[in-house]
Length: 111
Image 1: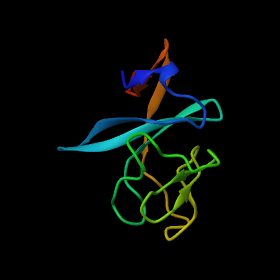
Image 2: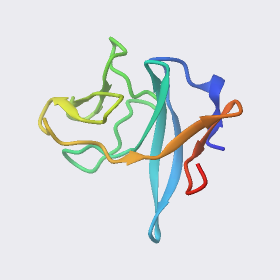
Image 3: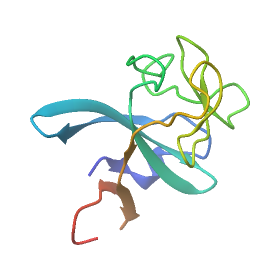
Image 4: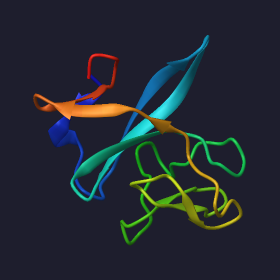
């Protein structure tokens, strides 16, 4: 389990976790937006640096967009597409997750 469902409030702080891609562990995060959970590799599409201002702080002040703390790139939380900033049109790398039984889990072939 990544986290309990209750740990994610709409537009609130995210939860950081690690995901394995090939032989590499990558930082990732999950947030709630529009009532649904969305997860991404924690890496800006412009320059490969982590997005959060402080651990778990991914949303801008309006709580409508994910924002890169370094370059100000703004991403739609439901799609990961950059809507403003130096990487406009690029996308965060999604991580497949599922919410069930009061928790958020990495999605596997059985889901």
